[in-house]
Image (cartoon, rainbow, N blue to C red; front, top):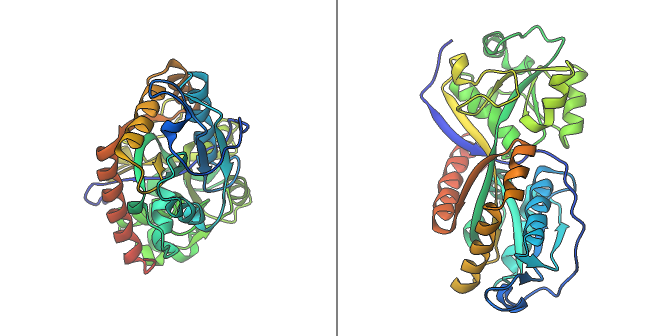
Length: 335
């Protein structure tokens, strides 16, 4: 198969699962350090999830928030959802909360893309980066009845007639499931603007589209399709990570002759203009949470890859991701 030069992009948002009920509602504003002594638990943190309950962001936020409380690193936490515009409604809310060290937002590359595709006035470079937490593979998936047995079969048909080879995803333009086929198209010499992308509202609707034959293939988070693949309803042709995914019977794109590696990621940002002391206290708490046995077990149970970085390193990563995504979306006329 013809290949393109290696491209690496991390893309963001998947999964569903864990539940954490709000442990208390606190007033908005004030300092994260205001809940107690500097060496005690942070009190009154609120964690905003900028999309729906049960989403990948929601699952992730509720998982680490629960560990923070269970490990005695935080108390009286609340996780809440504020949906809209690919996460940019939540982003605008966070940016408006200048100086509020009690408000964090769960996010990932879906929000990075949405700030461009939705022409958001609020941007991630206005926030305070705290930590990148996890990475997760995307999967290229077909129904079990599909004539495509390999990536070579799929790419041959896709290149011959991209308009009649629709690809589905559970992301709007700029989200991870949208960026996946666009970058894949570039890697196999399909013109991205010729890609027939069908956006679905969530993994459930996407799976119905796959099984119903409404799309030729899908690009989605590996966690959305592992059960369906295990039951034989769908076939995973490839995963997007550098190494194969444990427990998934599918090659990587590079093993299939396509020089493209990328991962889906999720992280945490805080409001603008919080103090250095407040920022460091949040980073320290998340760092201690990350080192706990409970969090390491969640990584294993969810199939998430540990991708932990904090502070300035995370800020640099966000800047690089924003530039890459803007470049891709600009080429499609979406930024």
